[in-house]
Figure 1: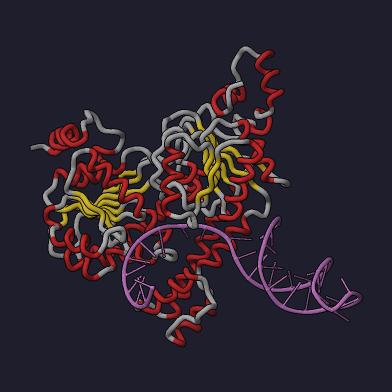
Figure 2: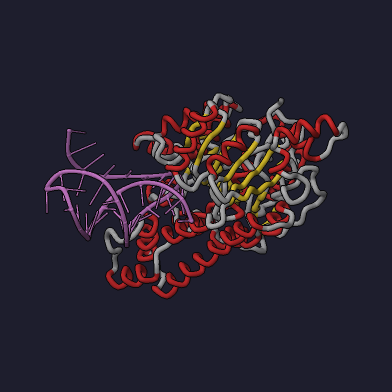
Amino acid sequence: MDNRVLIKKNLENYFGYTSFRDGQEEVILSALDGNHTLVMLPTGMGKSLCYQLTGYCLDGLVVIVSPLLSLMQDQVEQLKLTGEKRVAAINSLMDAHEKEWVLNHLSEYKFIFLSPEMLQQEYVMSYLEKVSISLFTIDEAHCISQWGLDFRPDYSDLGIIRQQLKFPLTMALTATATERVREEILTSLQIDHENTKQVIYSVDRSNIAFSTLICDHDKKQQLINQIQKLKKPGIIYFSSKKIAEEVAGLIRNKTGMAAESYHSDIVAEDKIKIQQQFIHDEIDIICATSAFGMGINKSNIRFVIHFHLPGSPEAYLQEVGRCGRDGEPSLALLLYEPGDGMIQLRLQEYTLPTIDMLEYSYKKGKVLEGSCSPTQKQLIENYLKSDLSVEAAKNQVKSRMIYKQQQLYYMIDYAETSSCKRAFLLHYFNEKVSGKPPLCCSNCNIEINECYKETDLKQKKIVEKEKNPEETLKELFLIGN
DNA sequence: CGTTATAGTGCTAGCACTATAACGGTGCCCTAGT
């Protein structure tokens, strides 16, 4: 049967849809033609269907590498809802006995979810090597580039894993990656760039308006002023757990809105509870660190505010991309105070080992206890285990640091630029604005500071019957009067 | 950069004050002893 006909039939059979969304058909056909495929589709465009449907058209096991336990659990549940029973996530939520059972019955499964760390377990690999893998999938593939070189080194070893598995057909999916990152992903996975099909869609989301507010004093109060006038629900991102908690409390006390904080120290049960409440519109505002967001499928988030400067344009677009999935107008607001870059800069320094640390550790063959952060220690230990020389390790760390700083400087420039914010962000991804949306950014056609003033708005409503952009903005973003 | 913790100073000999240093974010895996 023609693949085009086959996938259409399977789309109906397995998912009950009659038509594909943008990009999906191209991706699946590419994979069925035997191409390794790198997929960049904006958030909410149905990336998971790409590998799932491909899997249904092929004989053998689909292995999905996923960064978070909660993501795996979600995907397993969703597949089960479609009636699929041959699906499991092998992770630390299973006890040893359950893991062994699943591994012993791998050939009876269609979809297996795993973390990169789990793939480092030799016993897991020994089982995977014995079965036929039809598709090796890397979900949220930007993690390879974002985390592989420091925070989660096992992401850098997926190439070796592929080699051990005899280079299975591979699909890597992400929503935000520059050309450089896409190349990094392919290289890291040991995929031949020539024989790879890339399906790339724009990172632009025309219903999200970009705005920056320069705060030279009392940022917290300015934040509260803003959110009181904005439509809910929304997310506020922070670079500090403590401040996230403090502001959540402040919002509750000063405005009476339902606000909760979310970061890595929140116990697992509460995390799930907060997510659920947020999804069911019982929480107006989440004050979160970067821990919050991946896998959050909520369509009606109206704004994403950044209290602190994000570390990279990639991170910013990922976080901002969580609002407005329903296509309704939404707001990405950055609160910027000159000097904000320092927090991120410090965090970056704290992540990567210094040259001194590397030299000492290589000389002694171990890490000096108590002298470095957990991520620094982890990374150095990984270098010591690898074949890399001190010089190579030093160079890698140096260029990594420069790269991270460049990403940060781009965000500082974004905050300070007086040209179009949307164009500025897209430029980082080597894209141009195609068709300026009605609500573009605070440098084009929305004056965020002005239009939030209630008096101004009321006056305008009386004076001007004709809708101007600011008036439209008010209707779209602000609470009804 | 702004905030907080710690160490040091000096007369109130135990507390108030000040100078200085440290810190800030993401997750997976598992082991062993209760």
